[in-house]
Amino acid sequence: MPGIVLLGAQWGDEGKGKVTDLLADDMHMVVRYQGGNNAGHTIICEGRILKLHLIPSGILYPHIVSVVGNGVVVNPRVILEEMENLRSLGISTDNLRISCNAHLILPCHEVLDGLSDDARGGGGLGTTRRGIGPAYADKAMRVGLRAEDLLERGVLREKAESLFREKNRVIVSIYGGEPLDVRRELERLEEQAEALRPFITDTSHLVREALSEGRNVLFEGAQGTLLDLDHGTYPYVTSSNPTAGGVCTGSGAGPRDLDEIIGVAKAYLTRVGEGPFPTEQDNEVGSAMQEKGREFGTTTGRKRRCGWLDLVLLRYAVRVNTLTALAVTKLDVLSQFDRLKICVAYRRKGRPMKDRPASSAAFRECEPVYEEMPGWGCDISGVTRLEELPGEARRYLEFIQDAAGVPVKIISVGPDRSQTIMVDGEVRTPRQGRFLFQDDLPL
Ligand code: GDP
Image (cartoon, rainbow, N blue to C red):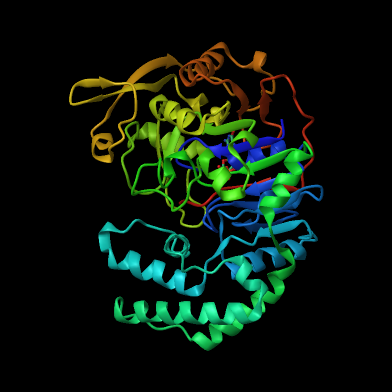
């Protein structure tokens, strides 16, 4: 079963980092297939903080080949900084491979991201202003630069110069911004190209080779299903496809290579930023989830909106990703509640609905229909076997599993690697890891 996909089944921040770490021991390759430096983890290593926004966390393990797939947009400055930080901690980057077809985020994209979001005023999408949307836009316009352009000096200079000049015209004439110094930017890009060249290759070929040899390849999604550009809650979405279809377009693997598709979902639900959220608890329940689950963005410190688990949206995630299993995280956060609510359907204009409506206007009008369940009222953060979970917690999970129609195979009851229940009984010996995984970034 070599092709394993791990993706967020909700609005991101589901705890994918911990689950990737759990599976890493058995992997030969970890592939990121979408997004840019708007995802990732803070890793605490020997008292030092390391932020990885672009390079897959597989890089922490010497036996893993870490691939930045063609579906990712790569900022050369950021990836070089991450590589430098890793090396300064004694972590080798020799096993890093960057797809020659990955598009580049250049300084003009970062500038334009900020200018265009400002220009939208209060109606801004609250992007991370890292140039990710504009780089994907250039990819779709077929004017973007790709990692392959870094391989040949002459080609790079010519293409980059024409792109920089065109973007300067937009920066100045549309937004009244400061133009970029084209000569300086070209020199910088050429230096970056020099440093990145050895890592750029046809990664789709590497992925194919690994899969053909029957090796385990983990495709690691960033963000989550409901932030998917096509299948998410548009326009409050990211500019790529975190859903399972994105694995193929973003890595070069084929649909039949995906043997297991694991959706990571919290036992409740959170959302960062704007947009409809039917089960949101803008009250003491939500605050208690926020507090216990530490639902605050790492960079912004912004509170994540919290609410009860929404099975309509979870079933949707199962459908659009053809999930084969679920990993349910942060179950421990619900221990504090005497009674739990779980959304089983919606009501819109008085009419019941089983599915999420496709139109965003209709989705905004959906009200949750809840089923109530008793809580378990005790600490479960030390439980490592399913049988040891209180009956109420097991029933809560069974309810999710029945509604989703796919098995819950991993249950997480705390941030530590040891605080995990592997449902198939395959409990791994908790490793004394060097690394501690922390938070993610929004969008
Ligand atoms: P990602 O955005 O999906 O990659 O999420 P992360 O892996 O960065 O996890 C988000 C946060 O939740 C991190 O600070 C984790 O340490 C924490 N976390 C993960 N699983 C659990 C869990 O089961 N219980 C609790 N309390 N925290 C968890």
